[in-house]
Image (cartoon, rainbow, N blue to C red; front, top):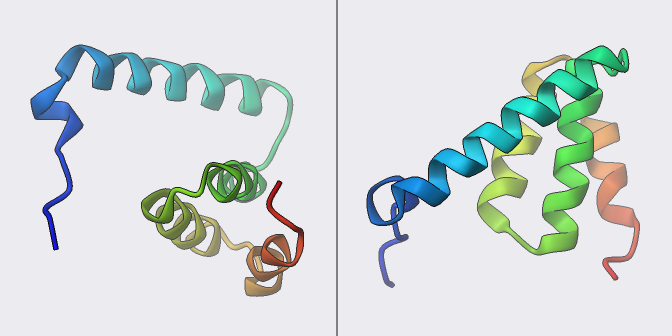
Length: 82
């Protein structure tokens, strides 16, 4: 098994750009009145569409930690990935 690349070390400029985009998205979601838990569910769905196992794990954990029901995270799996 190969080790995951560390984007922060291998491409710090790209990593910082991704952090900036995440900050803007978080601000827009908060301004729209989207709860933090539901915002994690939205990120979870995007991760599923992108087939990113790491992000799926992180956003599932964060959604549950934000108080979202396990059923909500599980329901997103029932939708087909396109």
